[in-house]
Image (cartoon, rainbow, N blue to C red; front, side, top):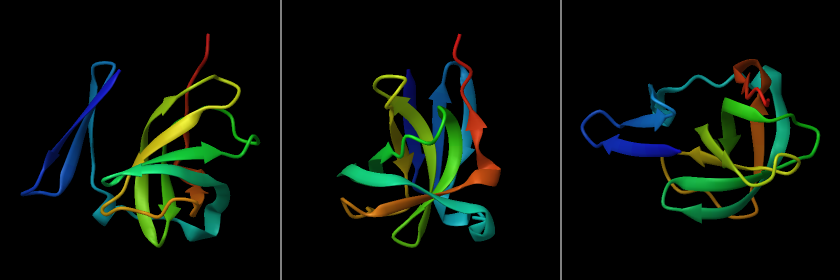
Length: 114
């Protein structure tokens, strides 16, 4: 289970995920476009958070940087079945539904499934 808090002063998000804390600031992240691959499509948007349906060619991804509508975002959660998960990403401002999403493959951290 994940929870997210946002600091308007710093523009940082603090994500608590299984007792691990880390900060993400989509405005300041570096995105490696040379290592970019098509990742999927935005299915739903609530505020600055987007739900992404990934292409079936990707294994389960735990954390990565994504690019959508010229904004860098951070995947911070996934949901749904293991064979077809939906990813949740946070951006600095809302993105458009049905937009294509690209992923920086050098930033991928994979989930281990037991």
